[in-house]
Image 1: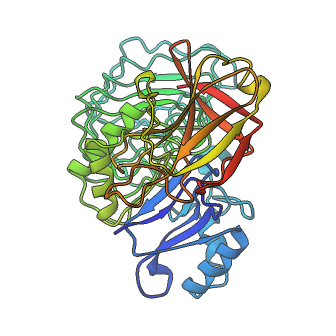
Image 2: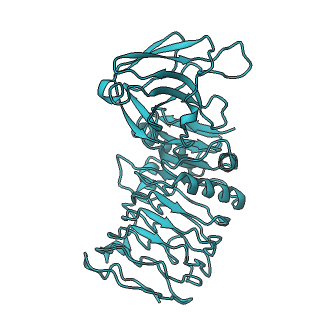
Image 3: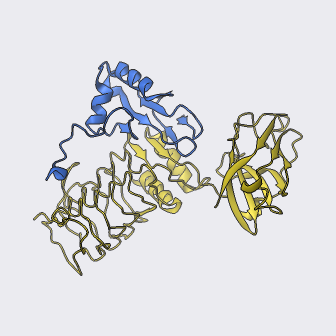
Length: 101
Length: 332
């Protein structure tokens, strides 16, 4: 049994997790892509979708029990975050050693 | 030895001629062309990567090799004989570059030590990215944001990627960010994709490839249940395609094969079309269910055009009425 976000689902923000709570239960979260163009299917048992990134951020931080978890994962360029954020800069906290030279 | 020509180049210069350069076992291609700004594509087809230096998830191998490079649009790595002496990664290898085509399809390229494809392409305008038909992806643990923005694989390349990933990788918890890449429905790729998901992984992609051929513009089954459409989209449809066929197609069987559920001849003035709904009295789905959104297509002069209506079709409603007053068409 899989969980699915269709191309035409207007809720484009999501998280996927296993049972339980805490950071380790969150396996993936972010944006599924443009409406009408991309879809998501997952074998993770829990998939929750949201209309706005702010709603997703609140939900992710609640699951992680960390009020800054969502921001941290994006700014650390975590593989858990999919797509582009409209709130935070991806990889901001990563030292881009190659680009700085 | 660490090779880097990219960051030593100020910008807009002729690329070096590598000719038949051979790199030995100690070489590391990480960031080789990162931020390079060439005024012509660089020929890497004769590189010998049969014994390059491996690294970790964030370094070594060909990590970030073409990241942010300009002027390199095509990478022929079919003959690289890619083989690292240890784990390596394609993380950020082509990220945000101008590369549109990557050919790694040579069967001498060994991906069995590759850990991750995270951000490998991201926003590069990639349309073609080929792996070998015997690719071994057994070590892969990450592929998040492999493709983003307009980047994607061809359907044939994505089919092969799914089939080889299913055949060689048993990991779970991987997110495959394939953006708008589409796969062939009803076949080995669809089965592979389902297996990958069932193993506890996540896939973001463009879904099943839309395959509508001229032969599929056939009179649909009259189920006795319909929704009526009024098509009055002058310059977008009626005028340029008058005399052609307007159809709607949907995967009724759930196998990835589309079937015709509406068909009308296009006239230069407004015309109507009947979308057939499912007959609840029959055991199989023979028409649309409430909410189903079919693909609309035009057959004109032997060419099939996908038609995206405007306003958007919101879903089938038995005995309902919809209208199309504008839209865009593109050849399939």
